[in-house]
Length: 150
Image (tube, rainbow, N blue to C red; front, side, top):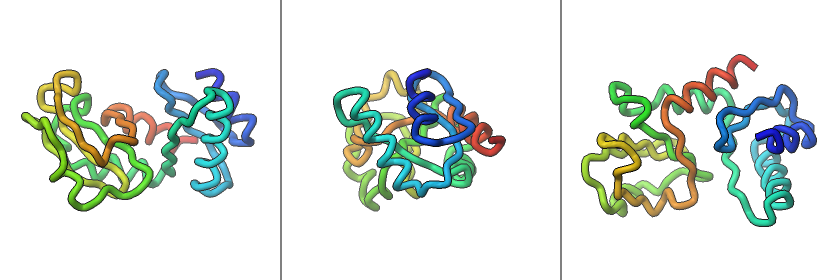
């Protein structure tokens, strides 16, 4: 994560903070979300030698993701937001396979999933989420807190 932090600092982002070793980074930038995404993707491609997807959300978007969680009474460590680059297709959940006791809902640029038995036991496949990245609600809450207090 030190390399990711340095990469963000080199890109001119300020107040850079990382959270857990899964590519979460919070920072300030005057650049548009599209420019931030493009800049980080190029830097990560140069660093890793392959394309790495980047999902950018503002502090207010993170707050909305947390607020709009359709499963607020479910354990936050079993409830995930799958971050996507674009809004999910309206019929995205109809194409999901392997569901057992999972609950799913669409968000703005996310798919929310409550894994009642835990994500590790799930056989759920959501084709629309193939190129997304999932974070549980504990992580979403922490990242939101970090972004708001920058």
